[in-house]
Length: 475
Image (cartoon, rainbow, N blue to C red; front, side):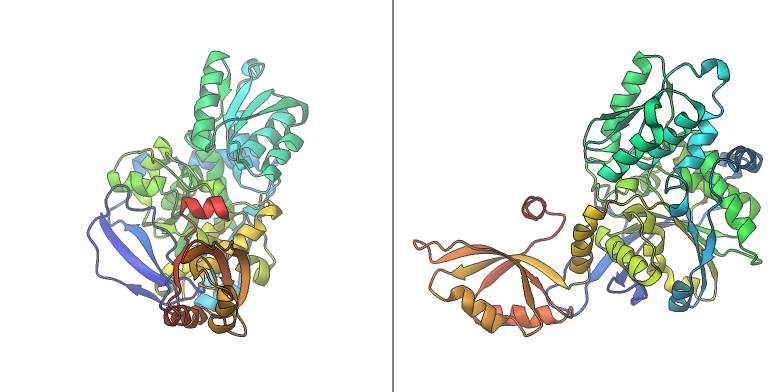
């Protein structure tokens, strides 16, 4: 296994991407990097960790093709056969044939219905009087709720307390009278432990979100449709999001046996690198903390079965900063008219990292879901603008004298700069006092002029980053 590190500009999806000298292996908890906002350049440079493997796949660890195709025969009359569409804009941007698999158009607006149905339909009729239990950040819950209502099986679903309201309401809608929801814990992993304990106590049937062969078989049916839809001689690259790993394990199992020359790329959010860490350490590990912004892929501990499969067949695992995910979401909506959830944008977010390798190639990216709460769009836009160097939040130490704020506005800000946030209380008994200031610039390089003016006037400042607790508290 070779560990390489790449740097790229995240201002646009086709930004400069240069291979750096291979770095030494990162330490266990060195992957939760913040989205660094450079003060002194016109572009923001993000270091993205990539694990690259040079080993033959272990076919023995894969889910058999016959199992996945059998699952497809079971689910095909229940699911929507979602399109695999060629993206003209992405293809032109990267000089490649780029297709997007639109699981955002699935019945429950994510691929999770596939695995849920394949698992639950396999429960013998004689056992269906028992209550089904599951835990989920939202998408798996919707799939399970839909199936339990369809098959008239009672179900109790555990969800984190911070699950988007759109997902909680959708679970209620799909499950109707057959589903009860329990909001427990701050993360999927905490909900999982609570649901597993309750299931064991009540002799229920547990439907795991990703660490189950039946679930993986169902998710693998995505690959069946991709290979039927694309009439190219060869699919060179397949990009898919990774949370617990069930979807990637299913897709990888099918591709590596049917089209073994395809290069498989797993993509995780930078703040939740559970599979990255598992493969790096060659064992499943539980992360101490995670960033739950990309809620559909925010898992502290990847699945044991998916780990065995992905560890065997993946070419790369890429960590994408949450801010870059937000930028991709905005571009998809503005340029393609596609509204996705954060996890749904992960695969496409990794394309610029591979722009040289994919040129002239046939590429498939999975859009995994679109269960996004529109109430989050303000935060998504903010994080995207911070990532691109267009928005800054900072503590500014103003001299406590009349006209200090006016001086800052007139002398430091340019004609196209604007203040988006200002919290300032003058303290007469101090020489200086901090103010929370939000500034939005037209171009990334414009902040350099603001910074230089502040230095001339001896106005000190400290930029706040989205990963800092104080940022989360104040903004």
